[in-house]
Image 1 (tube, rainbow, N blue to C red):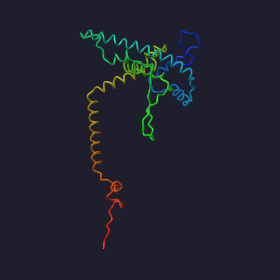
Image 2 (cartoon, rainbow, N blue to C red):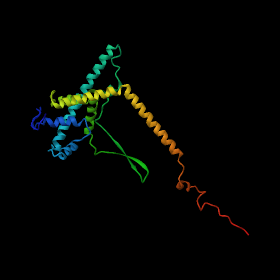
Image 3 (tube, rainbow, N blue to C red):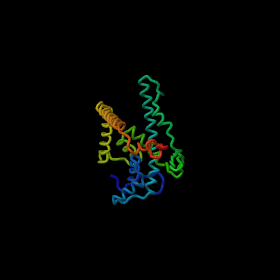
Image 4 (tube, rainbow, N blue to C red):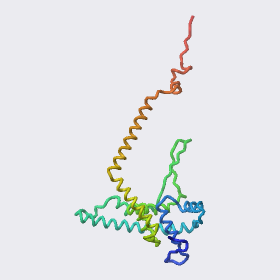
Length: 247
């Protein structure tokens, strides 16, 4: 367990970073919580929270580490795939498109998001670009998500913490909890591949389709209300032709 007095030895001079700040940033990249959200969570729990400047500094350090480590991990997986293709007597350069995209085409330096703003008065669509939005967290979250899929949630946190110079002790409670998360994830993957899961999913879809058909049939059987029937011009009072009697 880390405390506030554990520091990481830095290569540069100056104030050293606390080990708990780096480990927190590694965990934050696996969940959808920002640094300010974590600070509010600490303060709401009556726990003294670190400053935003120190958390942002540690987040920048961890983002570079995650990016470099994930690129090395993907390069190792590509080498492994080439060796597997050679053993199968296949072309070694015949690599899956997803692995090639993750390694070569992962470009997140320039990000442009177009947000559609619907104007109800003008009944038109306009696109505006957010120039004030910050995309610093997007890059490291993409690399973290790729590493999480390739290694699993528990193993990914252990490896990234070790790469960030804050290793988790193998026999600690945190390591045991991460192993349980990893086992649960592997069991869930195997359960999705089983016949029981496919049967339950197909039966659920069939039940929902039957409910939809029943509701659709009842909806078409409904008769029009009096308010809708009164809109026809034949039933309106001013639409009726008046008969003129002649003597």
